[in-house]
Image (cartoon, rainbow, N blue to C red):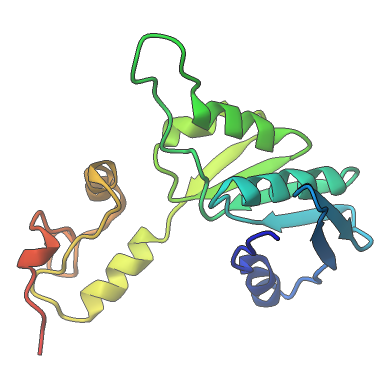
Length: 188
């Protein structure tokens, strides 16, 4: 049995009016995966997050199955991207680099979404860029009329990057708040 990851690819295909290619994973009794896809075009857009080791293996198999097609890989979430530094002297991989290199094989272009650290992009062996929805989200939050909208980030690293990525509100105030969420008052 394997864990099914969210199907963001079909939502992107629908929004862009692109055809979907049938694909199905099955698990062998020993846990190994088997993949069968339909006929591919000469260009393929793969959209998949690597939320766990299983989804990473699924994506690697999918990339390999698309051999012969020019692949653009979109990673809404890239697992291991936060492991971009060594914390001790030797004996530790740069996991972000290892995953970036593995995902690059057979891929023509890579797009990440709000990657943890832009330096991870340099580890891909194909042209890579990061996109963010933060400015659009900030504009929407600003349109709600909150006096001091909270800033939510998964960790301190995310909070440190936000001033560069989020625009000011209409009246020039930053859209971030240094206060912990527990101190944010809700509007009635």
